Image (cartoon, rainbow, N blue to C red; front, side):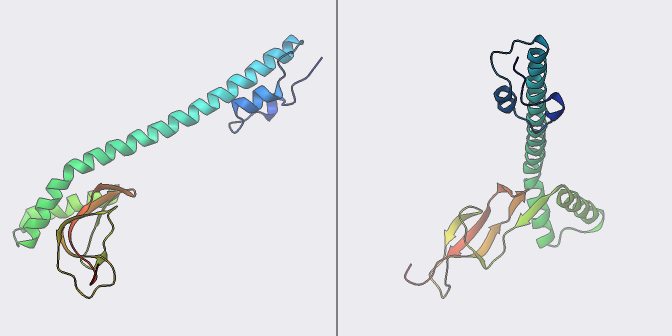
Amino acid sequence: MSEPTTAPEDINAETSVEEVEAAAPDQITDPVAALTADLQRLQAEYANYRKRVERDRAVAHENAVAAVLSELLALLDDLDRAEAHGELTGGFKAVAEQLNSITSRIGLEKYGSAGDAFDPQIHEALMHDEPSDVAVATAVKILQSGYKYKERVLRPARVSVTEPQGA
């Protein structure tokens, strides 16, 4: 009689289906050993299923939050423009500050400032300025701020770029 090399108590969430199948030979003659091997295989499959479902659930949650935050970007831009023109006063200013606080707490991050090195992964060049005395391509003017959520770019910063002399 051949015994599986993996005892039932050795099976845990880290055990893969392949490890269990490799541990149980195909020609098991003992019915108890065969049922034990089947149980081990099912336990490993279920543990892997649970991990995959949790991972998928977390990704779906993150995508849903990112979609809602993307819809709020136009509103945040309007609030920034109103503040720049001095029209953000009174109760409306309190609402704007609360909205900015909530989005920051959720994880929305505003980025892009004049003088940053131009990175095509996070910047969108809308204008090109004449070459100047910069060492690398630089975002000299931020036309529209960019936003990130958990290192995911929701909207690239729209910038005016200048390049080094002779580039």
